[in-house]
Image 1 (cartoon, helix red, strand yellow):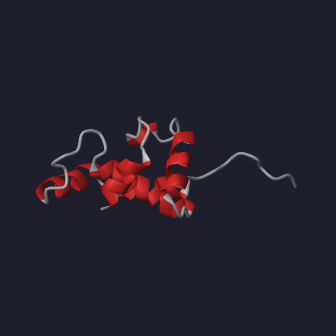
Image 2 (image 1 turned 180 degrees about the vertical axis):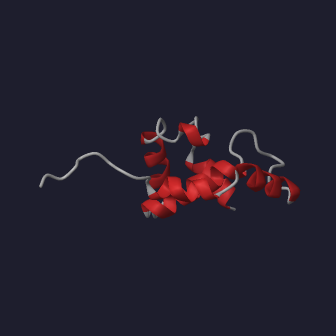
Length: 94
């Protein structure tokens, strides 16, 4: 019996993101003043990046940004279409 080399099913990351409602997350953030000074890096993208970091078990901002830079094309459907810097993540985590 040969093993099937094709991936079947959905990755864990996609399953978690699918449970969240983007409009509700952004509305909650706006109601609490979280979107006041943002241009591109809003609360939805911050949530997506932090969930990605937790699932991938990253320890530092450098690891997160390096991985996001390598995976930019795969994460474009989630709204991450630009390079996220360490300083942006550090400011958002405050």
